[in-house]
Length: 194
Image: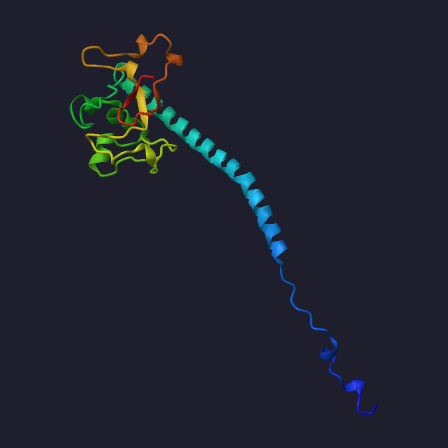
């Protein structure tokens, strides 16, 4: 037993070498399952919050359009502007006096004709007083032009002033219940009558 010297054995040799502890496939699958369950619970809530925020922004823009119209009527003997027509380009004929060209300046926006002329056409996804945040590109069939513009908002078509018959605020029977602006589902005409 002289040839076996236990005192000269290296201490590291005595230790059993343990492999590094790694995640097993089962543990990884459990973690992925937990993450996917949490994501499936959170994503609908986040989607609802985004839609709610977009709705609030849209209502705020409609409110701004209402305030712009009120300022316009205050400056024009309580007469409402023309609601616009799809028969003419937005920069021609009676459309020069339409709400989107005259009232827009009251809320710090350029007239719609100026936006088109400056190649700053309001389209979905770009911040503009003329676009509801919930308006999508799917609503556009072609790129808007002055001849075929796109309207995410519309003025109440029953409040139309013409050169012969102006509609004034004092003619409204129920001003508090009268909707002046709303989002426009038709997109190609600047007014709503529904």
